[in-house]
Image (cartoon, rainbow, N blue to C red; front, side):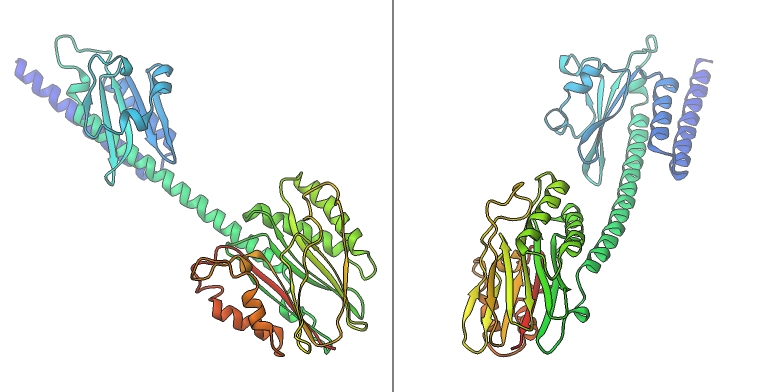
Length: 409
């Protein structure tokens, strides 16, 4: 009679376990959220199997407590997974260990041979003189823990992939919007006195480089190049604000120093001093040949006179925009272009590019390629081919932007 009852109990327990596993499997297939899966799991172990305490540490980006049912908060807080648990690779029985107070067993859960979680089991309900429910159902606890935790990890990975896809779409949209801020070469001046070309190769989807060319009057054209400190979305947003401000303020008659001070105030207001912009701005009068410019901490543009062979670097004489509330000094320079000349303005993604020996190329490649009477647009294309920009240079680490002009006199 006793054996018959024992057989019926085993059959009942076996049926319960199969039903529980089926319920969990159906819940996973129904895409129930993590909270619901954990609630079912805790109910099966604590309510149905009489297991008193459960604590789960799970790895996602970091190790965190996923569930604490019955254990003290002190235990949860003092456990350091890296120090205390990573050594455990198989089920470990905890006996008389004051550090793991009230813990009977630690069950490691692995996924693809990598530790995914650690389940702490504490048994507060003994079955009289029988076997503890922890021991009695240990294989089942291990199985259902593994199924639940791997499913939760898959949910996390799936949600992360959705989040990454959404971010990717946002970045693609931001990249297209930023690309629209950069003037198309077809809209650049291509007259008999002035030809302007731009080249823009962002290293990431969005960046902090910017150049522009603006027709200010029949004879006057403004052009500039800028680089925001830092990279990514924040730099791109600041640059879009900067572009809007520049286009609103830049006129044929405004003093370039005044323009810089206005842009500085707007940048300070937008960034609270956390970012700055290196900036080169110029205004060219094709009738008189006068080139006015200010270099605000930007890389020195290269100006080459094709007739005399004279080479000039248009050095910086003031700090960058947004570095201080006020400029200590703003110095505007003027050059008279009397012969066919070429100018190349660039960002540090080009000048800081390293050669095969690990040295920055500086302006050497620019000078080598423009020191002739060919159009500067052709020179730049040939330089890019030699340097493998944008796709064939593994040392390229930043945005590369150039605005270049032929002054034909």
